[in-house]
Structure formats: structure tokens, C-alpha cells
Amino acid sequence: TQLAPTDDPLVFAAPDLEYFLDSPTLLADFIEIPWEVTGPNGTQQIRIALQHDGSAADVERYASGTRAIVREAGVLFGEFPAFDFGQYTFLAVYLPWVNGDGMEHRNSTVLTNTGSIRSNVVGLWGTVAHEFIHAWNMERIRSREIQPFNFEDANMSRGLWFGEGFTSYLDDVLLRRAELIDTELFAQRIGGAINVVTNSPGRGFSSPVEMSMQAPFVDAATSVDPHNRGNTFISYYTWGSVVGLALDLELRDRFPGIALDDYMRAMWEAHGRTEIPYMVEDLEAVLAELTDDAAFAQDFFGRYVWGRDVPDFERLLAPGGMLLRKARPGSPTFGGVQLRYDRDGATVVGYTTMGTPIYEAGIDRGDRIVSLDGRGIRSSGDVLSVLRGKRPGDRISVVYQSRDGERTSEIILTESPALEVVTFESAGLAVNAEIRRFREDWLEPKGR
Image (tube, rainbow, N blue to C red; front, top):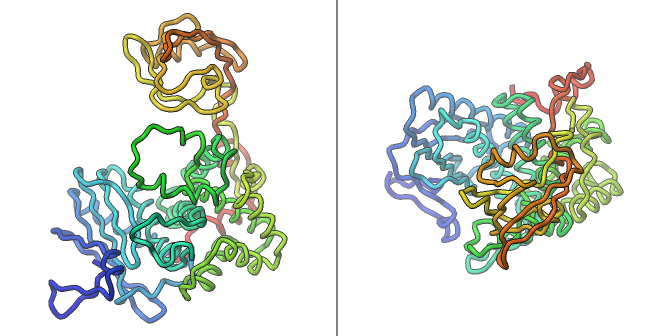
């Protein structure tokens, strides 16, 4: 636990009720793995309290990666926080019967997952990195809009695209700098986020700031009513990570010697170490001061934070030897949709995405597709058979059962809009010395 120890080994203390409520405690036959780092007030202890059902080799692998993440996080922010009682604890439980989650606290984090270290170590490290970054960004660099925290009402912050989103980008950066993933996998991960934000219809409804304001409805909310949020919402984790990536690359391109690392350190200096909560306007002001370019900061925030634009990632990624491209060029699609197959057809389980051919054909949740292009649909193989040989622009008939009976419509196939990011190497493009220098500064280890 992060609670304060006392002379009695079974008694711990909290300065107030709020601190107590923020201090999870693990009671288990756990493995404790401690090591030391240097903090602002001297030596501090980092420790893992690990409960799992794997081997000693699994423990060493997990602990080695976690140490590397901790090391790189300290370098990224320039220093470790002054942890209360000189200690930070990872409460890690990886067992088949737990509820999976990661949750930050002031001087600890809870890490639970049904996957084992052996089968899912990169995924587990990703949560380690994300939650440890929160020791800076969320726990100490905090939004003023949730200060003080209200335990009896919804707490809304316009800054979650920064608190959660930038953290989501930086956890991938830490995994790469800790050499726990390679550059190709890093490219795939940022490409997935770019694809979601670029192609989601939700971008037409709200900005990253406005998406953040919806947190009380989407993050651990209790409503189970059917909804169409997939068409109107983009997670502030995902959109914020894309904004963080864009800012990192824009800074490196326009302001030599400055990167997102420097921006996070500037936020730490102004609002983290001091624990002076920020408003979204303060985030822009810190960027303006860091770059000595208020016009750049205003334009960036206006377009990508308050606005809904997507940055030009094809241009921004090229200096790092990465290529943004269509994932399935020329491949026809009627729109990504979840179907449940049986002998009577294929039932649409979730929403259909606005703007896709199946949506435009009038098909929605609960409808049952009976046939496509004259062929009965009872399996995913039947769908693939219909699409085989088709091209974007081709028209296929669809018969489906809706609430008011059987209907016939037409689907006009389009090219798959899916995007991906790959390295120049995998795309067969040359990587020169300038690209290697850019990558080294961006993604190579800093803490050695």
C-alpha cells in the first residue's frame, strides 16, 4: 500500500479520508521486488508487489522491463516526483480470476490482468508505462476543473485529452525507449490510433476538449442502454494520443532541439512540481512560452485541441522514416460491422458506421441480412465469397429483415479507408543518416 507505515507492521496511516480512499491495499502472498532511484529529496524506493502464477523467469523478465520503463520515464520528465514517504509501489496481480484494469494513485498503481506474464508481457508493460507516467501527468500535473475532487457528483474535466491522451502516446514511446518493442511495432501502434481518429465519424461532432467532457458517460459509467456512441464519440485516450504524436513531430520539425519531452518537462516545472492545477488555456500558454511562438501555439490548439482537424501525418512522419498509407488499397468493403451468423442469416450486432455503404443502404443494429448479391449469408465465408472479385464502386443487392418486415436495398462498395503506419524499411524505401538521427533522438533509450 502507499499508506504511511507505522511502528506496528500491521498498522498504516493516512493524513485524511481522501488520501485513504486513494490508497488501495494488496493483501496477498506476493513477491516484493524493490530498487532505488534518486528523487528531489534523495534516494527513493520503487517496488513491485507481484502476485501471479508463472515462473521465476517470468518474474525477472517482468521486473527487468518495469525497471527500464521507470528509468526512461524519469529521464523523460527530467526527475522523479518526491513520492510521499519516499516510496512508489506497483500493485500487480496477474491471475485468471481478477478483473482487468490499471488505475493510477498518488504513489502507487493497481495493475490487474487475466493474462499471464508469459503470454501477454508487452500488454502488461504497456499498462505499467501508462500508469507510471500518471505519477507525473494526472497525479501532480492536474486539471483545476476536478480540484477539489467531488466524491458525490460527476467530475468533468476538459483536459483528459492531455492527461490520458498524451499519456497514451508517451507509454508507447517509453516501451520503445526501454527497448521492449521495436520500431516496426511502435509504428503499427501509432498507426492504429491515427486510423481511428481519421476515419471515425465522431470527429464531425466534437473536438478533443468536448470528447473529454463526456467522460462521465463513457469511462466506467453504469448505463447499459443501447446507444449509437460509436458514431459520435472518439475516446479522449485515442484522440489525445494522436494530438500528442502530432505535437511531438511538429516541435521536432519546426523548433530544432525541442520535442514533446521538453513540453512535458515545462508542464512539470509550471504545474507538476508546484502542484498548481492547470486549465486548458494554461496548456497553450506553456507551449507558447516553450517555443517563444504564441502564434504557433494558438494555431495548434485552435486546429487540433479546440478544433477537429487531423494533422498531416504523412508529412510529419516522413522525417522519422515512417510511411502513412492505405492498409488495403483497392480492397472493396461495405463497412466494418459486427455480424452474428446463424442458419437464418447474419444479424447486425452493433451499430453501423455513418457514411459506410451498409449504413447508407439503411441497415442498422438488429437487422438480419438474408442475402448479399443473391447469395444466402450464413457465415463470414459467405461474405468473403460475395466480395471476392468485386471492386470499389460495384453495386450488390441486399435483402434484410428489419422490424417492419423484409426489405431490399443496394450496397455500393467503397475502397477500404483503413490506414496504417509502417517503417520505410518494410515499405522498401531508403533510410538515410538524417532519418536515423531523427529516430535516435525520438525513440532510442535515453537513460543509459
